[in-house]
Amino acid sequence: MSKGLSIGLGIVLVLIGAVWTTQGLGYLEGSFMTGEKLWTAIGLLSVGSGLALAVTGARKK
View (cartoon, helix red, strand yellow):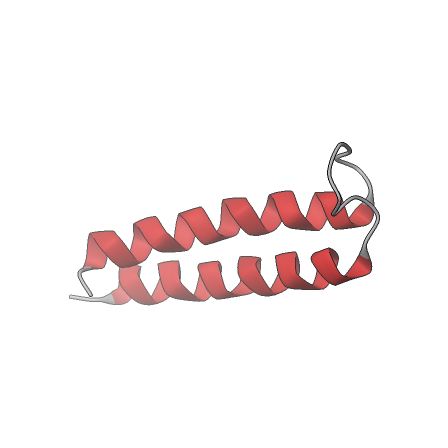
């Protein structure tokens, strides 16, 4: 996977994970995910995976 693609996908995962986390915590309302702890966990995993992917991509030469 190219450096730019890794960083781009990592950023997208972080943003989506942040939305899912805030919905799961109940801060962002209007969805079936609002207030569901499952979506908080999924969101946090997505944020962590996205950060790892972006950092790994940034370190490629």
